[in-house]
Length: 289
Image (cartoon, rainbow, N blue to C red; front, top):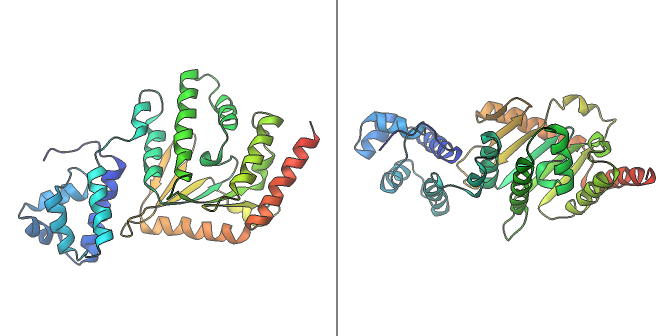
């Protein structure tokens, strides 16, 4: 099987899952190679996402790793089948940054997302007008073609929150975000009204961290913790800055962010009180019309 020098994130997830299952089963590369009747290097290539894995080999490995639960096996096989498939986001590869499209791909596979935003409304909850105003502020010299693509991708991403099995989204927003008049009073008022409506959706839990709470000192930057439907997979943390995007997959790193999210979850206002804080910001904004 040819070497894959540019693995997709799905291929990396599959590789990580198989590596963790092997370790949990107490087996070595040599043991796995014997199961496949192959050289040890083949197992290494699979676990480093340098090559794919054929379905018969995958099933043999799952047998050896004592993965007997049918739903687990089916989920891993589905991940293997989809690993090389192109998603809807690929049609924008000539317009938008690869890092953004990679995030869209990871997000599309997630079943739960725990999000902390320090200064912006989370992407999945942005109105088109807010997104457009944000784009004009952050990239004033960018081509309008890129804006159109951004709006299209954002619309596709928001579809994750609908349907029979929607994404479960937990969001914590710093209260100051509600008072940043991105796009002016009309745009921001519309965004706040949209947040109030979103906060009533069953699959969305929206909390606001009050401005006076000392936990604001722990808001080092926005981050997302993404969980996946395959129970054998570990969570992934995504962080972003103006110059880079980072994914943390190490269990220790993920646990640090998970602990921080839990602390912020306790400190933030509950959903009902958070809705009141949003309504207060909306009332103040509309008074200034």
